[in-house]
Image (cartoon, rainbow, N blue to C red; front, side, top):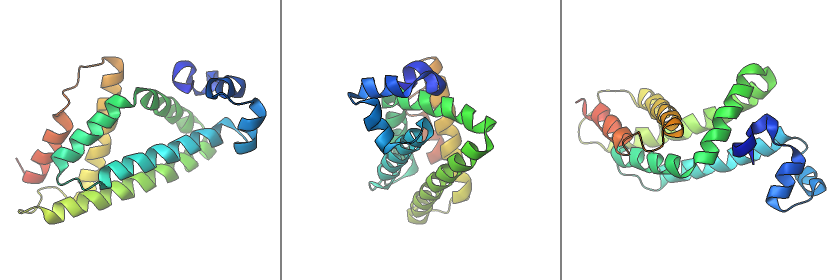
Length: 168
């Protein structure tokens, strides 16, 4: 529903109807649409963190897994981009959004550090910088893929991350 109408355009009535619930049932679990969004965000972050922690051996396969998740999650990417704009305009929303982003960054940094530690040669780039690179590539490629489906090479993120660690 959010992906079709945007965050502002989707009413609680619309959301409830699409989910097969009454408006009262939605409000019994979420006081506002923002609370509903953050519940969805928590679920998406947990899924991405689990994807990253599933024993990914290297940054190339991590990049490939994230690219696959991005391609499969078009509606999520639309909602995320829409809500990001809302957070940039509302300080209270931004603070809560930033807290979620920090949690995601910490999980990615932890996994990237473990991959760097397992590498046979030292990385040419610090793990904290690689974490931001993962996010920047993921966000940027998601935007390009939303605008022009099929335009981004599926192996690109993995290749770039692997090359950064190897120092190529």
